[in-house]
Amino acid sequence: MKVHEFDSGALTGRERGEALGRRFAAEIATAATAYVEFFRDLGIPDGTVAHTVAGCDAALREWAPHLSAEIDAVAAGAGMPSRSVLLLNSRTEVLAAELLPMSECSTLVRVPPTRPGLDAPVLSTQTWDWAPRLTPDGVMWRFTTDGGGWVKTFAEPGMLAKIGINDRGLAVHFNFLDHITDTIDGGVPLHAIVRRILDEASTVDEAIELARSAKVGASSVITVVATGPGQCAAAAIEISPAGVAAVRPDDDGWLPHTNHFLDPGLAAGEVSEATSTTRGRFAYLQTVMANDPSGDLARAVLPDLARRLCGAGGSAAPICVVEDPTRPPTEQWRTLLTIRLDPQAGVIHYAEGSPAETGAPGHLPRVF
Image (cartoon, rainbow, N blue to C red; front, side, top):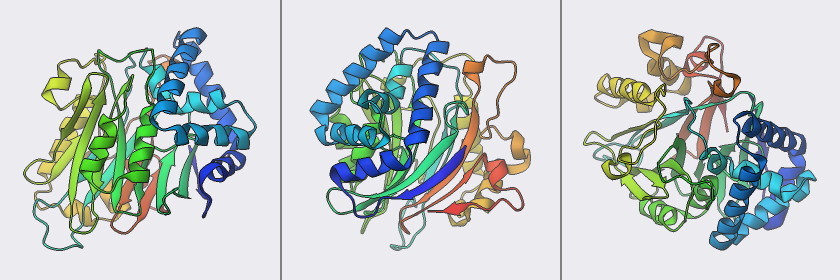
């Protein structure tokens, strides 16, 4: 995956969306085509995809009409139908029709259990695992919000948001989940919830309130870290059609998450493929936490952080996902991005590839 950087400056409203669409017209078209083909390869009928996307369209236009208008603007800028850009933003909802044995993201957050000062560091990092066939390109986008602030987010081309930070010291991570109540009828796209949190929230409680206000058709967890003036808090906001739960850090400030529910109530309806690596990756993160009782990882720059996350296992560490050649083409996943969010400094540190690749000699991460 190649990550492109784009700053749309002071543009807001329709102009902001059109600028993104113009800049990445080719990449958005490639992504839309890849997802259509992927859904067909999974055996999801075109009619089911259209039904789900229509449900997402209706739910989004009711919940956040300004984001529907932005999707329309991105499509206009890219010279393509709005439904194609909406499909990209609704891909999680479409995939709710399938149980995929995917390896999809490992997030590790630590906030100091007691905050000695406003400059106390936090750890806010994750891997992003996805199918290379779907994402030859990614976008780091800095934009001005309609309220005059700024957001920096990584997302697939044409998407509203995924992983990112805002000018109010908030950081957001995103992991896929499956729940028995997931439906093909669509709902507010989960990527739109991420976007509104980045646009509007300053605190963990505000992020939770936004998530609870949306009627969804699929499940995910949005981990939020708030580091604005006078606060240092985090929560993993687990979202499903059955409800929303907020999982808080442990007594030492650690909050790991992979791809299974941690809230006991929601976990009762969890759906998990037998070959899923989620629990193995979660257990591995717990080992990383145990080996860092003082939270020194929060002070490590990304190459060193990546090496320490891998530990003695190096590229064999469970959080470094590689394609399994014995699996079908629709089940080929790898770690495409290693990212560390620094909401206090207002920057994102990232590198294409796994933590093992990020920590290799001569592999320099980028700062956005």
